[in-house]
Each structure stands twice: as C-alpha cells, then as structure tokens.
Image (cartoon, rainbow, N blue to C red; front, side):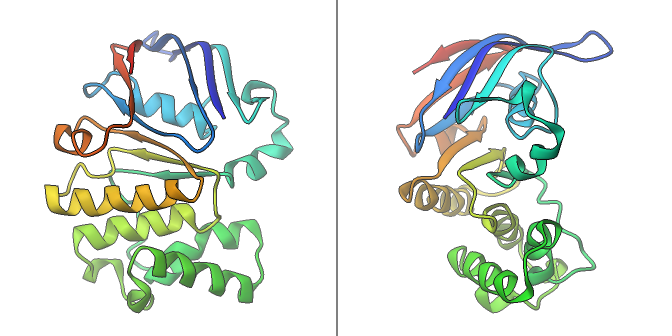
Length: 219
C-alpha cells in the first residue's frame, strides 16, 4: 500500500530531514512511526500526503509513484488520504458541521451527500449532537475528535496522524487510539507518528523508528 524506496528529503537550508529511508506498509495495516522531535516523522507523513515531494528516491502509494503523479490527479489522490494533526487546526468562526464539511465542499459534493457524510463522520466519533457548536466550546478531546471526523469524511483509504494525542491525557489518548482502531478494523491503513510511550504500550502494532532522519528499526 505504502512503499518508500531509498527516500531522501533535503530542504533549501541543506537540512537533511530524511536519509535513505526504505520500508513497506501493507494495505489495512496499523503502524506506529516513532522518534524524537525533529527525527523526521512529520516530513515522512507530508510526503505520503503529497504536501511535499522527496528530493531523491521513490514514494509509492497503491503502486503509483507520487513523484510522477500528474498535477491534475493530485486533488483526487489527496482525497484518499486523511491527515490529522496534533494541533487540530479547526476554524474557530465555523461550526463543527462546517469544519468537518470543508473537504467535501472543496471536492464539490452536493449538499445532500455532504450532510449525509458529515453526520456519519460525527456519529462515528461520538459528536453528532455537537454539529451546530463552535469549536471554542468543545474540550480538547472533542476538538481532536472533530479533526478526526474531518479527516475521515472523504472515506479515505489511508489515515495519517501526526502526534494526535500530544495535548491529551492518557485517558483521552486511549479514546482517540480506540477510534483509530475502529477505522483500521474496517480496512483503513493507519500510520500514527508518536513518541507517547503510554500510547505505544497499549497496542502491539509494528513500529518504524526514525533517528535523525534514518530508519533504524522496523519491528
């Protein structure tokens, strides 16, 4: 499903964020990406989400080389990938419903289909009764759930999460982890970047470990 083959990522300031990274993630697999802050975890996720391109090497998703993906196909590809951040990045002047519906509005879905999908996503994360609420009125855990609903409203094949529990206590972190598990149970490929040891100890999923941009372990 996801393959990195000798991937390097070097920025204009000559900082090498990733160095000769190679791995495979199978369709429907649940994998943790570990490493200290600055190890390259966020960069790796951005390459999969096509927010950036590799400097060298190949990133393949579903057998397609992202380096060679025609520009006109990039928006369609991105709909297959849900991305969740540590900072949920909700728009404070929009309701919960409006925040979750944004990807569908960009994609041009009809109003009836948008309403159906948004309510289904909110129901999945346990926030169906909060659709008219302002994000400002929600707890940190609820805000993160809204971010997850927004990431899955397009029904993506891949779910990427960048330190999704970094601002949450262990109880809320486990709730969020359980949500990811539910999506994985229905066939979604899940890759979570985290250095939360408590979270890692809860599930025996495979781990990819980055150290200063290099992949040092895959177990």
